[in-house]
Length: 298
Image 1 (cartoon, helix red, strand yellow):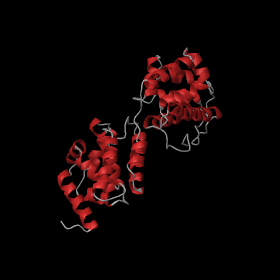
Image 2: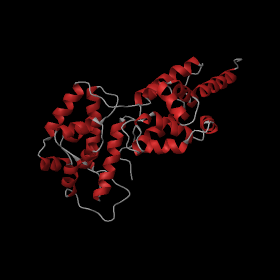
Image 3: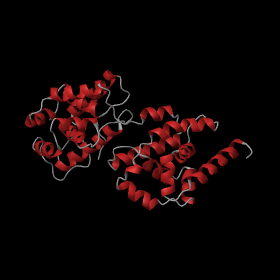
Image 4: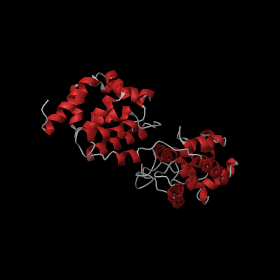
């Protein structure tokens, strides 16, 4: 299925989930293209997001949105794998970015997506909202009130820029984000980071975790089940990893610094222990390894 936008760089985690849900709605309804009404439904399905909360306040639910949306576009059999955007949806996405800039936000969230949909009332969202007896202005008023009161959505983009990630670390964090979106989890968690570091064969950290006999099967099963302990946001660890890197004389944050920071974090250490890794021994090993590389005698 085709990505709705050319780049995810400014989209919050919830906005990414909403775009994924949008594509799934189009596929489920067998519609030939993605339009603004599908994006509205995608936001509605993004549990835990600001946009979903606002639509719920207006008594909108997936159970009433999708049936109303069904008849707004002709069904196509069989459903296409390549789902194009309606021009109106592209306009709405551009307007969402504009709304984000107006608020001075560095990210585009589900609230901005709703503002983009309703700003010029373009696409099939107009007919959808008319059927549901909700005006675009009602949605705009609720969103603007929430954003003006300081409501935000979880977003790793600023933390990623601040952490000065190595290319490999950036790849790991991006993979963790994508895993969380694929599993439709409300946050990019420590569990996603740990599993991705184990699977990243280009990193020596993967071998270290495998040698420590990390229980991949249990981690994967409990992560897919949405265990809350695994969904604790990795943002704090990511932010502290830069300090860890600098204290070890590095000008960038590598995967070894991410893992060392995870092992030093109380929640992260508990997760490592839970899946068979001794966090204290891991920290000692990583520090000794860093000292050897820098020529410092132990």
